[in-house]
Length: 271
Image 1 (spheres, rainbow, N blue to C red):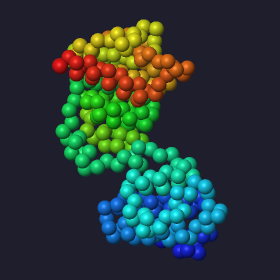
Image 2 (cartoon, one colour):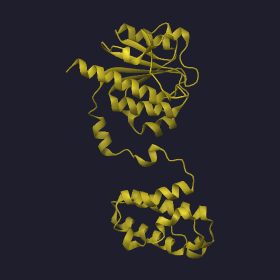
Image 3 (cartoon, one colour):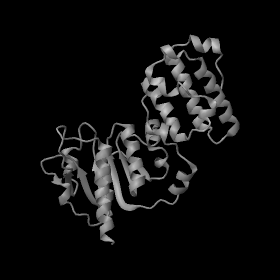
Image 4 (cartoon, rainbow, N blue to C red):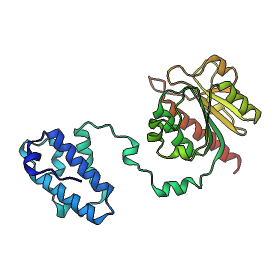
């Protein structure tokens, strides 16, 4: 990490100074367990803070005003969020999970011991890599056995999927298919109960659904949902009762709620 000289740092805009401070704090977090790197980064940060003309400094920077190395060196990593977050908001950064939940070696060990339920996701022509990545994380956490990716649904080769899945895409089995009819045919040959999540006139309330064995949950495109042809092929169409004015939910959030109910019923069957 390179230290900006005092004369140059003082001429920078508040936005650029904030970015340098944030880079310094992030570097400190990344090297928390490296004493040499930590001490050097703390010194850099101390220099920057002493060079700021606080009379004109943005009000969001107030938490940093009275800090010095002897104070910073006794901070916990949790306390550092009190410094990082105001800078992130001043810079209007969009913070995503991959920025705050790094994949660790412990995650990888846990992933190798993953337990599953006979539950399957069928994602038919989803457009958003963010949604698919979120669903890989949901599948990993709730014990989904396999994800069927249909049509142009992005695969784990997609960078957005990787960022959002945060490693879960390496632990949850998946396969790619051109046609949802082919996937339904595979599932029916294995006696899997197929439930479509859709707000159609034929849909039944989630509360009335009985899980009797292996179950697949099918969701469609974020804008258009599932086609009538697909709905005619599934065993049942279900909806989640909603109380809000919007009466809709992000597909990844919806499938998480539904999966929890399915696995809850499965747990009840074996207790």
